[in-house]
Image 1 (cartoon, rainbow, N blue to C red):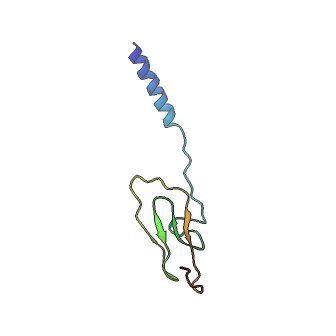
Image 2 (cartoon, rainbow, N blue to C red; image 1 turned 90 degrees about the vertical axis):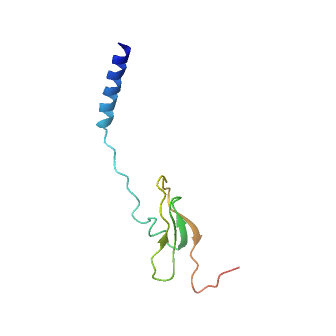
Length: 88
């Protein structure tokens, strides 16, 4: 009798959960892991690491892991203008 009642409650809860609407996740329009933040030479979302090449070349990014949960994109290394020499 108790098992039958428990099964009925579980079925009722499952049907309620199926009716919930889940809004789609939206990413910010101005920054993506493929484009990267402006004035940044290396960036990550903790799943994918990207870096900018030379002028006019597209960024190069690593592959994402199968179980990774991306975070907010953050800059790891600011871009160095080509007119300034690098400091050592």
